Length: 236
Image (tube, rainbow, N blue to C red; front, top):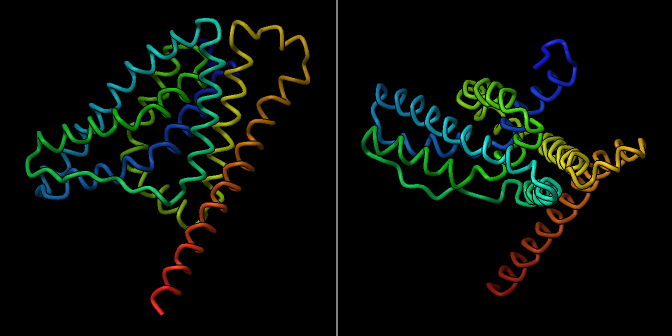
């Protein structure tokens, strides 16, 4: 692990940004799970719940990073991550977490960890791809993400609501990471012989994700407006 290598720092930044972008829902989970706790237990619940969730995610991501070394698995993972990125844009502002608030500290911690486990597929896959199989790198990146998730996810969520184009940038970053996953698959190493593809594939997927995701989101919004108009007309 060479700390003077620019690729190390770019990968580390990608891991932190990806984890932050995909952790917007965690703020909602944490808020709901600790809703009924007193102030003292609420702080403990936020810390230990997030710590446990991230520790579990490190283990899952390490396993995913090793699996991505198997031929074709990383390419398939890249395609799956592309779908996740498109879905992130399509469902922007349209998903709500249905969680029950817990009345005790241990219960709140369990809710946070379990909910994070259910929602962590995108994080695990994206971070493993950005780490490129470098286990120490992904551990450093995820550990640095702990305070960011705790203190920054709520802020990021509000910023994304205020400036929706931030979601497009996050989705585009996932698309770019997906393209790099395809290029790094052991079965597609030959693509590196064509240097132009090293730029076309990642940037192409990034742009494609943003275009398709926004088109699907626009289509879904139009459908909702049409259904609302029909309901209004029927009520007259």
